[in-house]
Image (tube, rainbow, N blue to C red; front, side, top):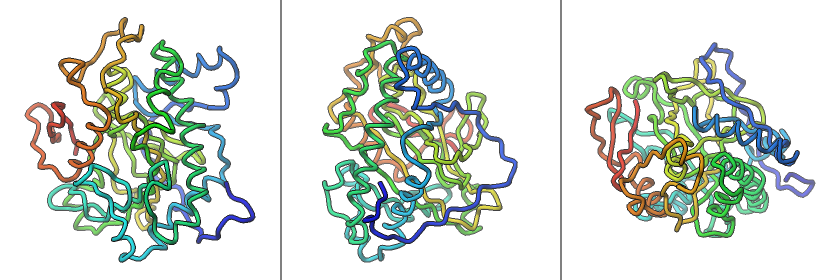
Length: 367
């Protein structure tokens, strides 16, 4: 990570933490330093992860091997593709979202439809875990060795132990899920830098202060490096929205659709959304760092029926027959191309829910 030879980039000054009394979700905190403390400690961690993923679908990770200073440096790096790159150069590196179902490169602002004609004010720059797979803006090129090291650390030292713990929770061989997420495998696992810009009062009113509707992530696991602007909320089983609190130098972990499919519904793909920050943070941009994990492209997203846990508890199938389940590449491409672009229909069963059909599955969007 940072050294005496690290390229100098402007420091991104994050917002102060909110002083508003928000209704925060009570999430489990998993300390990955305990992962190597022996079989008993690992079994205890696996039980905690299974409990968190089956009930809330979210938890925090600490002890992930990066210092506070190293994480702060990556937020400085994350701002470069937005603050240090001109519009004309960004246009050269746009994502092929509709054409190829891939986010690699820039997603510009005002690409996703939010509600009532309001378009998003979110920029993203997405980098495949193989940072040399495609070209990058000039300002980012000297930083690629750092970005590569950060992606490798996220994959090897954060994702990998989590996947092992989740496999243990299913009472499957420890490397079951790990073998579906190979670093050298053919998949779309990628790093995302994401910048939310403040919106106009008119847009806030039209969209009811919602910046991203309630949704499930596409892949298996999402790693979100915690940042101070409060905006992320999860939908609880009781039907209420609760805020995700910022924990310094922690990672927020959640499962997506693909993990829900593989785990037969045991590991929940929890609905989450992004809303307008509280009043004392509304003048700030919200800069995020994500590691979006996908299974290898050829992994069939059918339940892991060999799991003794699923055999005891029962399997929630999203596809009528296991052979009907798509592979990861099919699911990822279809959902990526559709998100924020599809004409949604209102649910006849649930209030404030819109939906679309993708690969035969009802995909819901909550407002």
